[in-house]
Amino acid sequence: MQCKVLVCVVLLALIKHGSSSEIQASPNTNTSLPCNVSIPGDKIQVSLININWTRDGSEVASFGEATAQIKDGFSWGAADFINGDFSLTILKASLSLQGMYECKVSYNFSSLHSSNVTFTILATPSLTVPQQWVVLEKETTLECHASGFYPPPVSFSWTRGGQVIQPPHQVEGKLTPDGYYTAVSNLTFYASREDKNVTFSCKVSHEGTHQELDFHLNITHLPYVRLSVVPSPSKYTPLTFYCDVESFYPEEMSVSWFQNGTALPDPPLTHQIPEQTFRTRRYFTLGPEQRQKQGKVECAVNQPGVMSPVSASADLDKLDPQDEAPVLTKSAKASVAMMCISIVLVFLLCFGFSWRRRDEKQKSLNVSGIILPPRLVVGEKGRVTLSIEGRQVDRVQTAWFLNNTPIFDTSHTGCSTGSVFITLSCLSEPNEETSSSA
Image 1 (tube, helix red, strand yellow):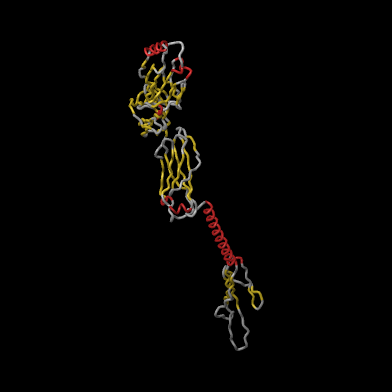
Image 2 (cartoon, rainbow, N blue to C red):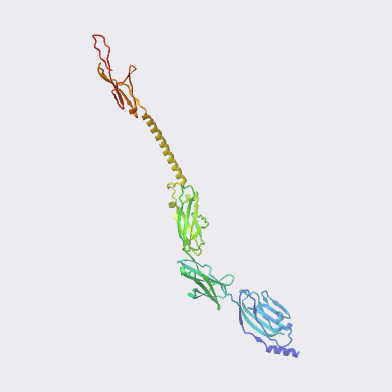
């Protein structure tokens, strides 16, 4: 009995009141909260040891009369108690386990040790620059996101080619539903061609730690866009537009067509040109019903990093007037040409036939009746005339007959008339004079 009292007196003399300490840990890591006591003597009865761990006044672990109780999320090594190690381990540290922890140790109802530990989470931020596409010679804003950090605040700075272009500035950040913080820093500048291969960097300082994210810019070249229409022979047939997109970069792009809310993407067909940019032509066809709706037709070019796409638009009323004279297609023009040729051939045939009839008619000869003189005198010459008309009348030969007797005394043969002079005699009775001529 005297020995037990002596031991108790010695233990009371060795009581240690530990000072407060602070411990920080990363999320989801195991962290030990120390509680160590030096107990004199070679033999310690574990049944006489009493341990109590609390967090902000609430008990999380206890040991007494050789019985241990500990809440989920904590652990300790009971085998180490005999060595005076009563440390508590926090499993998978989280924000909800932060607080003031207190360790109390007594032996045989005599207090031996008491210490406080402040436990906090230290979460370093993760850095991202989500948008690294910029538009050449246009005002561009880059964002650097620091997310998942605790506690606030953080400090941002920006560098270009190792040179500071935006000095450090502190940002408190916003609290997220999971209890951590996120913050954003903006860098606004005009991108030039010299920025293409330069290293940019976003730097963040947090609770004595420094992080840096390096990146290169992707520079977008805005295109030249031109909208045209393929002539259509009729307003009742489909109408095709084409959109010429030139001098753009990078090759990744898409074209959106709009006409009264209707969009139609088209597969790309690109060709690289010497300036290391690209060009393409995209088509979009309006059906007859869409043509009747009229309205504005727009070709919009979507590129990485471009918030406002470059576009070209035209009024369908001007590009495709409904009362415009129809434009003949190649097949229609060929049909019209064949029709004209047919008409000319028919005309030529008719004209040739008429000319032939006329020619044949002119080849025939017209012979008039015999024209006698109005008066003939017996014993004198009289003229009997015959008219012949027609082509090549000079080749016509004439013969005269009187009472079926050939008359060869022809004094004149003309080209168009034939004449003969004859002398007639007449038989007369005595004492009677009668004269006649033929």
